[in-house]
Image (cartoon, rainbow over all chains, first blue to last red; front, side):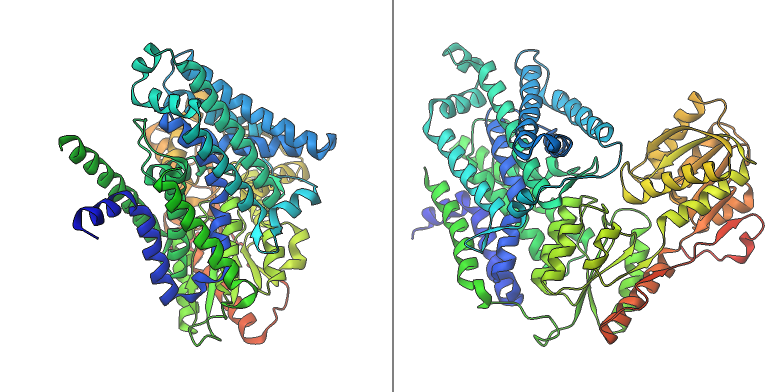
Length: 315
Length: 325
């Protein structure tokens, strides 16, 4: 392998290499890391953020983002519980629909009313959090579905948690949509240069509304996964979900300025955060130091991406 | 799909394959002690950023380490979903005991059930989970949040001589302890047939700075505010800052907190606070660690409930208490 190729691998696959390095070290110093239970725990722990991360990747490739994802997720959980009397299927459908509508509204605010996505989704985040507190009367409300519970704690082939299977299926499906369809290509074009995309006849507003609605839909799906694990809902759930998702997607190299990245790169970033959290717990790192390390990791990787992008531009 | 996606797929596949390969116990982790390492206890607070939590973790950890145990402290960031998955991590680590403060009394139940099935004992501490979780835990040690709320509420009723208006600066909306404090206040007002109204309840996320801002709003909005219930003494400190800035004199608005911090004891002596309920994180951390050690030594915990006293502190007895934190 020549030096140039080696540098290219380091540049393009740094997140994977970091994950592998952590895994190798942990396998030696904490063998419990490579136990089936622990590996599937990590995958389960990132399953919710990965599902929402799909929507966030669509948004960020189109140069938008959504701060309301955590509130929207718990909004779905709350709606599903409140409507469980009408049947499990109806409750789930209504919850996912409600979250999709919230996402659609975000899209309308951004694409039609031209409100900055930071402001519109921040407003939606606060609105939905308040709505959940009202709907739950500031208490924890509980669900009653054994079927959902079997999903949250059940395993395919007795090993792979169902939420991981769902997340993997959605990741593959939407990676194909992004990479192989006109819709995906148009989204990259919008993220690269919105004005140019519009001149080429791309329906920019429609694409943005689609991306926000998709994110809402995925928040709804995540809300159901959350319900299947916790069997309850409260206004305190998912407070930091937006930060976890955005941090993971950024770590994966998806730029806030849009036009680049992929679903699987975003997944790498989210997986790295999950592996890092797990590693630090296994290594008995204090929670305060954990935050410092995560912050440093994000800062380093994003700075490296920025440096590489500038270096490439000058070449 | 490009090379990135193929590489990512490889990592996912690698993790899945490793999991499958080791499934069935091939690489099953042994408890730390059995593996020849140090025995480990998990201390699972809901979050680690609240002022009360740091001294508690230090006190708990010191007591456990003196007895030869290692303490691991995950940070659930006050998120019930994260706390639930953190329990999964502790199960995978096969810790000897989990001492857990539930962020949410109901949401934690499935995780407690899983821990029991996996053979990892859990003792809830500081704050109780829902009673229906009792079959999955070995016991509870700590304070009774509701009982503590009752003591604070009685202080408020006494401060106001049974009539007036209270504003509340709470910890986190929907957080178990805050819900129980609110219930205790309602129940006390009804029980004592006091003519007391609650003007407003606003969350501070346990931040004294946020408490200052909220109190400033309260002062502007409510001219008939007689007392403020602060859900802990750190928040009460923030309330006092706002009252001082507004030129309000000590005792003009009665403040009741929870904790017994050095600042709160001084504020009671100075007349800024009417009273507080003692809950020292240092005493509590050591108390709960001793209960954990009792279980680890004997393999059982008796009695199931061990509730600490929450003495009332006011001007009449404040000199008896020494500032611990």
